[in-house]
Amino acid sequence: MTLQPERHVLVIFPHPDDEAFSSAGTIRLYRNMGVPVTYACLTLGEMGRNLGNPPFATRESLPEIRRKELIAACEAMGIEDLRMMGLRDKTVEFEDDEKMVNLVTDLISELNPSLIITFYPGFAVHPDHEATGRAVMEAVRRIPKEARPRIYAVGFANNTMAKLGVPTIVHDVSSVRKEKEAALRAHSSQTGWMMQETKHRTEEETTKLDSWFNVESYYLYSFED
Image (cartoon, rainbow, N blue to C red; front, side):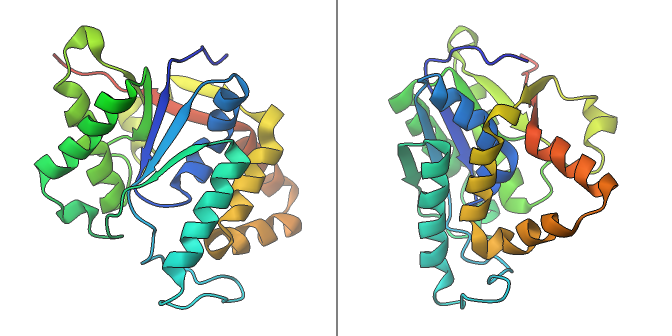
């Protein structure tokens, strides 16, 4: 699917590296088109289980390390407007619902995006992912229909395709594969093990991995009203 020009793309995920795994290629393609992209990263992922492979971070140093990794990943993707929203990792689900909706509403009011990329609530596995998706959907639902931005939603729970069918938006990002890999490598405290394993993979694993690096898929979220 060919990407269409957008007025502004707003990316909202809770953790550093959420964007790299799901959308680095798509973001880089939009930036190559000259489309402004703002990334609102809700936390620094300071409670992440991985401390590097071999470990090079500690519980105390991880927040600053992940902050720097996030900045480096954004450079690889061409993102010039990174917003670190200051919420605490693994507590997004416990934030007041209206506070979360207002956070998203304020971003939309400021940026007037034509497209938002976030998680699909109910199909995003991690509680922080789910809370983020819910807040985005509710904020957009409150906007008059004719003024709503479109939403590309990432769903990857085991039952996603059984419930939602095949993704409705599929982007070939093979032309920016190097940039996607660079964004993933930037998050080295979390992805170092994975990037190392790609060097020792079977032919079947190579085929699956190549597909994952070259294609990014989304569901176009729709509201019932």
